[in-house]
Image 1 (cartoon, rainbow, N blue to C red):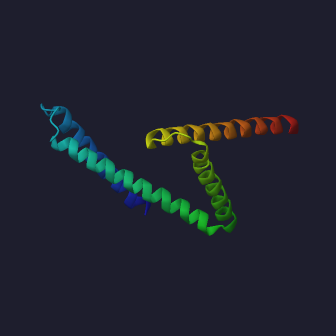
Image 2: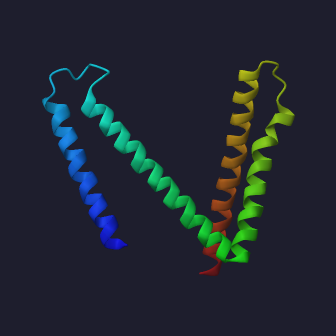
Image 3: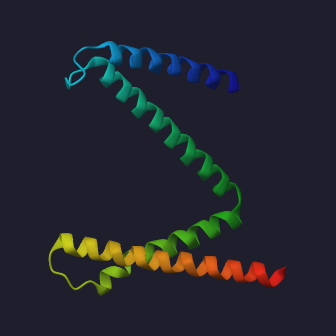
Length: 130
């Protein structure tokens, strides 16, 4: 499997280098219908899709193989969803755009306060145990 992925990476790298050289040598770089640029975007989207599938598959495999990890993941995901939807209760704006912006800012503030609080607690615990 490793050799196959290594060969695939090498082929895509060489293809990307060839397309990059073609893009540089093409006189009309401002044209939207530039074929080398289109193919570079297609390759980028394919690689992004492959990376996304690999990350999701690997993460799901690791989470599903350990019941404790699955429980923790579900708890943290639930807390995150609550933190994301909680600000909608406090928003008083009438228009949709203002509601989304306000709720997003409040969610950001809540997550920032939680992160800073956990950093402080972690630092204090680390200082007390030494």
